[in-house]
Amino acid sequence: MSTRCPCGTGLPLDECCGRYLSGAASTAPTAEALMRSRYTAFVLGDVDHLLATWHPDTRPPALELDGDVRWLGLDVLDVVAGGLLAAEGEVEFRASYVVDGVRGAQHERSRFTRVGGRWHYLDGVAAG
Image 1 (cartoon, rainbow, N blue to C red):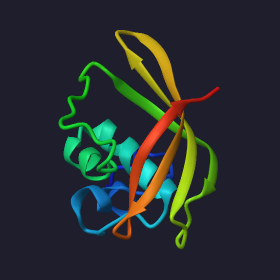
Image 2: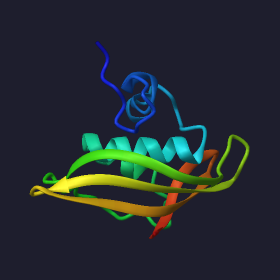
Image 3: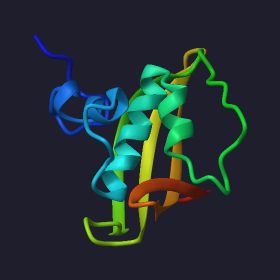
């Protein structure tokens, strides 16, 4: 039985974000697909995918994930541009989590841009 993708599409992981994390698909086709794959990478602890999909101008030299965070779910709230033929896009999302028994949420409007034909996370601002 296939594991459901953490990003919330309801698809099996290997048919959804897993193909971007594993390299089976070379790149996410839209800004939203990249954002979902990055959320999945946070859930699965895939630092390599997070760094590889971060814009070179804003990417940190290293990234250490907090192992105490348990991600609970993702809600995509708004998508502006970022389609198959676009060069830029924005995705607003809310990612719920729990740390030490306390629930919280990261609510962000993220900006994405293409570099060499591939979508990259540029930056984000807290929303809501």
